[in-house]
Image 1 (tube, rainbow, N blue to C red):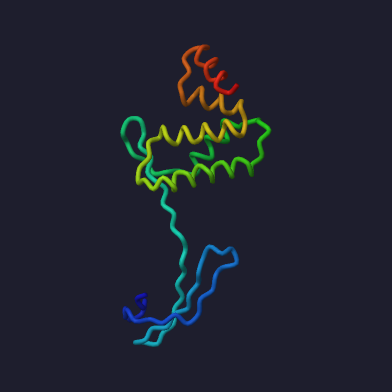
Image 2: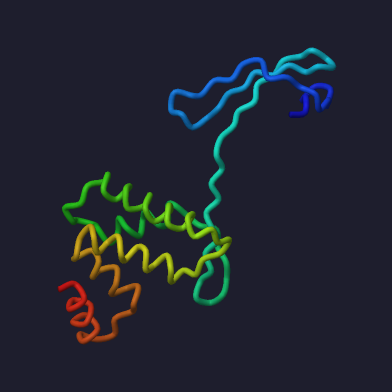
Length: 148
């Protein structure tokens, strides 16, 4: 680690501590050249893939957009916030596990539909009707048959 004071590359770790949450490591360091001390923090940086939309444009993944989509589909349904948060975590975990830099929006939509199907059938149909652009009653009937 480079010293922030004299830019020397030779530093020594004096103390290492893990945060109470277990997601951060704090290190006290001392520069071998100027003898000044400084603190560094280590955290895992998870980078979710970019989303490739149907028109080919790319957008940054948005946790908030995913959450609002799920909450909109689940509006006035008897599903706890914890269940929604767990579903979001599963979707994000799946996106990370794919190891891709870019993922088609259709793939994200399918993951959302899978989670909604588990959580609440009515919310699943709500989301599917918009996501799949149901044009007629037959489309609804087909989606309902999938649930049975």
